[in-house]
Image 1 (cartoon, rainbow, N blue to C red):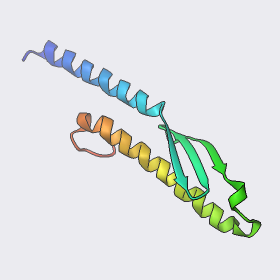
Image 2: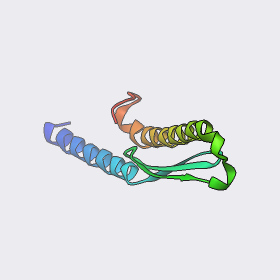
Image 3: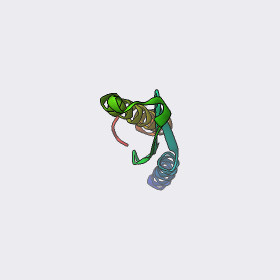
Length: 98
């Protein structure tokens, strides 16, 4: 294979990778934990936190904080899984590149 063909293939691969990453970045992931729901973008930017206030009493603030933490971590895990699913074919199993 000549160098020009290799460069062309590398450019196509880079373009495909950037497209996949853009799709992930623009996807909204929803994490849930009991009465807390969070939405984050693929960039891991928290977009929304929703609390079902009817299910919480004022003395349960510490539990609410824990539920928010669990929901955010759940949504972040979904981002990581989607990133690995879409980008893993480009990194050949080398985690942490994206």
